[in-house]
Length: 606
Image (tube, rainbow, N blue to C red; front, side, top):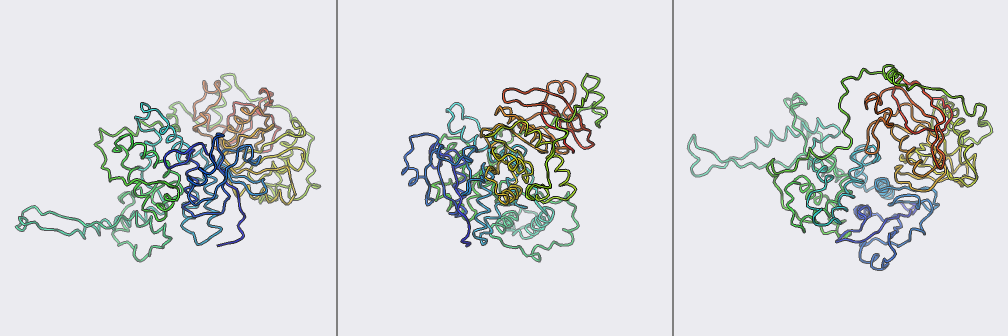
């Protein structure tokens, strides 16, 4: 166990207790993970949503052996007040992690850093440590686990009896996901092992002859003694951090010659396939509450055989029952369910898929030129505007080296291009700012924009928001080197930041992130200076459908709007309204980002 791990503060919301869980469910999930990891590295604070909370009732009766403290929302660090809970903040109050997935991943990483012997905890992050790493705005799976399922269960528990007769669509979607084919790294190798096990199991079947089955031609009753499930064996060997012997798994020659298309499919063992991951930790408290409520209402779970099997299987994982006991969660002992006849099952395919792509456009020709011609024929054409700040530039030679984007681990040529981009963007921001303004650098990456702004405008507060932890850590290291005191760092999805600010900035926010930034700024009545990404692919998401503008929807299909060249609309988002100043078309042979809101920015070199 390492002794030098700095204490961090973990802030969790608290609305009420229902049966054996704390709500919101994000709090129960966080506490369950802390118990499973046996993690005592965080000072835990509960943030009540109401005023009538009994301190001793909460601290003694709800949280097992975890020491917790109550704190009102107004007492939170200012940086945490700007974020959704759960949130973790370091002692200096400058670096905050917010949102369920980000916080849970951080708990796992800190647990392993403090005690490297806990490799089973690190395995919760899955293959390449990517479990629930993609943000919920673009990942259907992250959104289902982090947002949709918890909200669906909370809604189910609080609904009136007549409104909770049906299974929530998000629960049905999880049932459908558990029935999909498993895709894992080296799955063909595992599928060959499964084929070999199936053939070995068939040969090992022991015939048992009945009294009347001794004569030739009589029916012989066969009782098989199946081998343990290969998927389960692999899953639990991973949990116990055991290496399976290659010699034991060496396939016979006829197995190696079998085509991939003829290999048996792998069965779902846990939420993401074969291995127990953070996704299972997130889902267990939610599904547990749903099952408890359903059984109390006398509901038949025959429509959810896969979820029921998953729920039983998760309880077999070492440490799960112990963690549940610490959290006062009395896990159910469900009987094994048989699938209902096909006609009795709810039609999972009828569950709406919000991200379903548009049907193929039979009239689509392809390429930016036909699309541009189509636009021009309908009275839409590109117009160019003069550079708004042609002579403004930063004196890079006299700036500290840590301000230079080259310090952000990039090549010399790329750093030069980044300097040119920053010259133009900072010029536009300078025209908007006044002392005391809060400037938010959305999708900040390594902090190239935010650090320059914080250094050049010491009277303003600059907030960097980025989902990638390593990029934000590099930015903080550069900030610490400069001794900046007017800068905060928030690792979170964009939607989890709800603080007030005056100016929003984004340089090359990938794909749909640019539209998300624009929407966030407009809702906050903030000015914004934005240059979209020149290659981030745009696609329909839960939040956005393309084309965005009504005028473009009448002319272009979804596919046409997603493959043509890069549009940047230049305008000024005033704090009270949005005014179009001019439009600029930049040719790109890669993709297009078509924007419906106007941006005020200079011509950036892309």
